[in-house]
Length: 452
Image 1 (cartoon, rainbow, N blue to C red):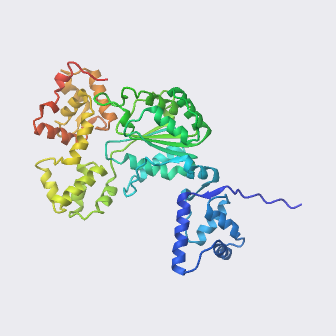
Image 2: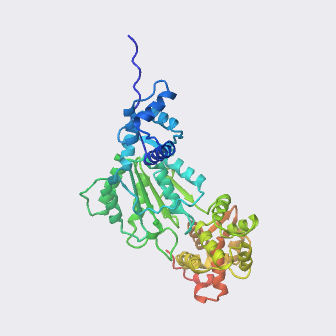
Image 3: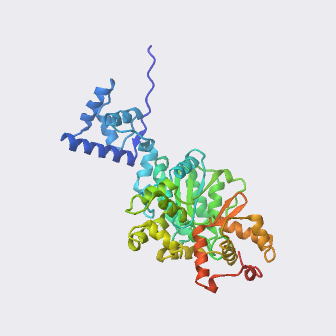
């Protein structure tokens, strides 16, 4: 008896991205040829290229996205339409249907800025951490304007075919944790929910175990306290720390991604291998050059490079500065850079952005920031310790530096420390304006350090 041929797995469908790509190509061909590209027409074209061909019914299934087919059939349709099939174009039917269901995703609070170029390496690193290393908690960290939300949005879009549920929640207005947990659980089709936080967390973990879920909590720093050491939680929001710890510790097949201006405090004992933190310092130089190239600025490559270095590749700050150059310097980069030799030009939105971040610091951190801003070059930790040892204990010094590092305000290379250039410019501008209230003296602060 002849051996039966193995059945091909018919469980693949096109993702939303793949279906859009296919439909756009069909529309292009119909406009070019003035012929309708029906399922039968496409099947006949496949027959000319592949001996076995495919049935028009199979093509209809592919175009509808409602029924699973074998991967080979999808490849043949893409080939005959001169399209390249990418991994994000198709997925297992069960996962894709769940991800594309209106009841099983919530992107209403997401912010999409796909005009931002760059972060290719960072995106690949995060994808690898989630899909290959099975990280349960991923933290995207960085100062305001560096592109955390955009990167998280690009990440969620890229990997959504692998998840049954994709849910994005913004914490910008600091909602209580019961509201956030209830909203997530309702989207996973649970209706009768308890009011107690502990029971809500238990239900969430059960859902993360039973389904493959991708959760994003944007602006996580909104539930963290200001004017104290970095990473501690606002009064009444301590349960968010428990949430991060439970998600990292409990075994499940899902992932929670957070974006934050500072690194939250989380107990990592035994869970470090399931956590991944990515500090963003700014766009790479080539990406910044590409972004600047989108605007009609007058300047040499070296002048553009100097502009990028002054603002550490922060895309939001660069966009703000570009607007200033266009409006007040006739789009000439050289004139703007020359003006910077006389003043830091911290204007409008840029000043407000830096002020908000600096005012979140504890009194000790502000004092250390003023002290570090005095150095014209990187200073070694040992030198900084000697310069401050007469009025600061080693414990307070290390705690303050650690907190500044959690906010990504410090650049550390081997044994050298450098305050973020923009923060340093802001601090020195306060000194230049002679604002005593904004210039805490380290000696005074440390007589009674009131920090968390």
